[in-house]
Length: 283
Length: 262
Image (tube, rainbow over all chains, first blue to last red; front, top):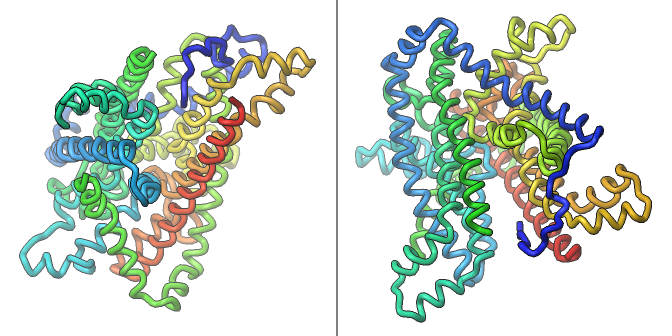
């Protein structure tokens, strides 16, 4: 949203609450505690209910450890690629005019609105045995479905809009004047990007990358369709949680879940910090 | 910038086309028979009605949170503001695991609800609870920036003209945030329809009772019934497209609104 620095008297400037205000705030306290905070408290309680040793044993179980490894690997592969894509896409959309731009923006946003199950299914119909390319790939001895490659591909699909979505509105608002000035001063394309564009968009970029990372690590539906969920091979951490839960290994499931919950808390703390830095940086 | 287009083609467009191709190979008659089967209809009803209730709940809850976070200064405000993002940051499988345990008959919440005859786990209420949790941030985060930008003079003018606090809200502020509010609710509804991870943990997945569309697709897939998988996935895809279209239209409305109020 446009922030107008001259407009100091916004209704948004918070005030001391009156009696009605305290009523609403109390309602917020109670509902936030019950709906948002309690699940976190439960995860920690359940993960450690048999003590620290049992917790560590659960985390260090070979299958869980492998799932952690695979999840981290997926994030390392997917996040950088989608950062590059997000910057390219935002650059294209905000710095050039061409026919079909609206359509392009819609295509960029598609993965964001699709059910994760559908995301997995479309990849199955491309690379799977029943799919478009499946038979050709099989003839050449290439297997994508039910391997880590399929996990990488659906994760790329699901999180492709995250960085672009953060950058497009910001770069639209900033306009291209800075870059044009740099260009007229003789800077080359890379210099312009590195010295002019990047400093302007770095907080939004980090923010988008953070959300992208959180989604990659937590993706469940799409990955469950294409991974085959083979224990110790193509099981990511969210799938491992379901597997342990279905095995009635509740402690193991909560131990695995606690690592993801810790990452989620880290994510929202970093997000809040980025918002503060970004807000002061822009003013 | 061919890189962008190439990447979009490889990652988004071609896979989508591959599935649509599969669906078109079905023929209209078969397609209609699959997507209108009794089990599919039950799944649509469960999915869409649960998502509607979740969106309704989150519209009210989201409005409350946004209002309190924008308007008041109070202890713990920043913690609650950060917690609002938790449902996006927390993997859906983790959310599902936590919710099913909270609402289990002997769980922290279930032990009080069960004696009252309120069954959440393995019932439609569980689906609604999972959908609510995973889509909380949409309404809050779409209203917040608009609410912050409501100019104070508009409100003061209404007050000096003798409007009560409720009148100021319902006649002055609410119309200003209405486009954002609607957009947030639609996003919330769309996300709830697509939610899978959290729901499968808590729903119990009984055909015709607690089986959502996404789950029915997975079941058809496991039965190696590829035509049905493609047809049902196409239905969900169409719903997602419509939701995207509606939110884009609302955004255009919002921009016109913002221009007028300036």
